[in-house]
Length: 510
Ligand SMILES: Nc1ncnc2c1ncn2[C@@H]1O[C@H](COP(=O)(O)OP(=O)(O)OP(=O)(O)O)[C@@H](O)[C@H]1O
Ligand SMILES: [Mg+2]
Image (cartoon, rainbow, N blue to C red; front, top):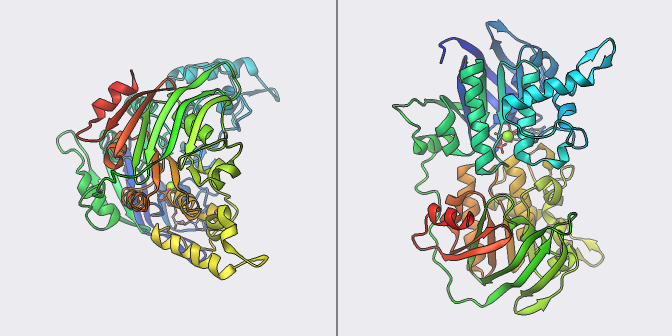
């Protein structure tokens, strides 16, 4: 690592109306270092990076930015990109119906004599794809490749712009273990072999420990501490957490007593599902899962194991074709034809993709919270607005959703706080059975703990909870029992007594 400073942000302050998102933030980044920014949901991490990259132009914030030895006053993204600063946002910005190569050179086309040179575009795309380890056809459309590959397209795109400072906002949030490993390896490689400096935002502390040279902690819009990580002084995660949340966390997972004697209220018998479009491809093969009232069960499986397909096909056939098998809810066989019927039968599915299934971003917290259960708010023929407000307020407090008020638009919330609104919305429908698909993705450690407590509370009220998660420590931390899946089949049903990650991995790859 060099000792030369490449970036210094001093005393940055940024407000949105009455909301102070950043106040007195300092950030100092050395050349060729991997610098992590950590902090709770809503702490101001993304906002700080948007200030740096000119998304929020000079004049809309106060404070100073020195980059590469000069004071900078970027007016927009292009300005910062010209200097080699490239930001990859929390929500990827690729165009789904354009090819990989078109995306790589979007806004940066290989133009010769007034028109795009496609041969050159393809040739260069292949070269860049090779450098980032992306194995695909450059003419493949973005919609047809997985998120792991999409993330690599973003990096190839950054490299096409001669990036010197690469900013990654939660790059691995939606990636599986393998893709995450590959991505982190690539970032290391870019640092070591291409002299690139990286700023990475992540809620995965093990990842920070593995990759960062330095961490800056932000809390409530203020920079709190800097923690250096070296081979001889590895990251002290407890200290990092304490700095992030402002108190020490005794444990990552709250204590919970198992509920043993409920009735089975969720059961699938030989649940079999074929792919949505490719209707010959089997995605769930005779899946038998039982959950008792009061039980929290986990489903562990790698990408492609059919976990999400199972959940969605059960949830009113919102995924799949040629669905066969029996679904029993509260002891009765049901045939749910759509999501409405699923909700009516007190089944809820909280999805991993909050943008698509979970949240209406242009609506407020209040509207989103109550949307799925408006019946409960009817007073005669109209909606009881006072009650609606009270409900939204209650969940905002309980889940500690950080926002100016319940009238804040969801688009203005930080990523993790959007996820809390999705949870509120489903809890309010008062389901008997809740399937939570990656419920803590993008959520900070402190808020995760709160979400686990909520899950416990729901179980103690006699609800059946199914948690799908790629984070094995999380499954082990909260489940009473774990089903493992591989290639569409259930491979084991394990009681969570002294269960280890290894035990799960063995069955997930069986
Ligand atoms: N466009 C906006 N309008 C109003 N408030 C905003 C806007 N963008 C961000 N905020 C507020 O600024 C604060 C910081 O948000 P930011 O997105 O930077 O958080 P974050 O640290 O990236 O959180 P997360 O880990 O959840 O992504 C939050 O309180 C958020 O609600
Ligand atoms: Mg963010």
